[in-house]
Image (cartoon, rainbow, N blue to C red; front, side, top):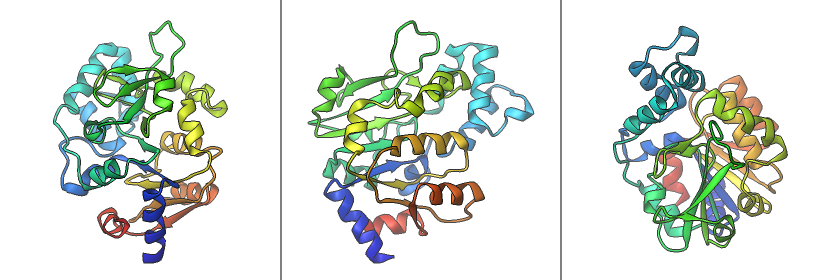
Length: 269
């Protein structure tokens, strides 16, 4: 296992492997002030607005119910409130920013990693098409939060990709079922995946850190972001592993590193 982690750490450091961060990475510095799983986020939303029993624990369905019954603005305000507590960059974020790899994928709604970016770095965030009358799937933002063109983003040394969007700086995110309708229709032909992401993944593999694959939405996005990448792929994944997770790892040829994230990270660096 030490040899595998050494290879993974070297691969991230020299830009051959792409870190793909899930919400559990926020726990590396201890308890986080924001939800660190889709189920925890569903519970926080359901605590503010009562949702049907069938939607409890399913963040996408809970968000759709709130959006339908209380309007999109209510959902946006709840997300802003839930993710309002600042989450300081932890050692993993600091390590990655120091390395400035060509691409980092961050599949959660916080801005801990984005807030640490400086210099020749920036991010591309997914945006909802719900209620919009423009053909847009994502926006590029410089390290200071100012808007940028995709051509400019293509030239950045380090690109952070937020495939579900983020609460800051503009409150653009995918969360409700209606947010995902068009995305899931087009994602197989890769339209919602920004061209700079497609280009940077082509000769690289992925390392999943702090991710679980219990939910179909999480598996769909991981699968499509990995599409046409070169590999190899790794996932730091410990504890009880579901049948769906095991099937996904096998299908995508992802080598599991069965260690707690904190222990694995200590060996990575």
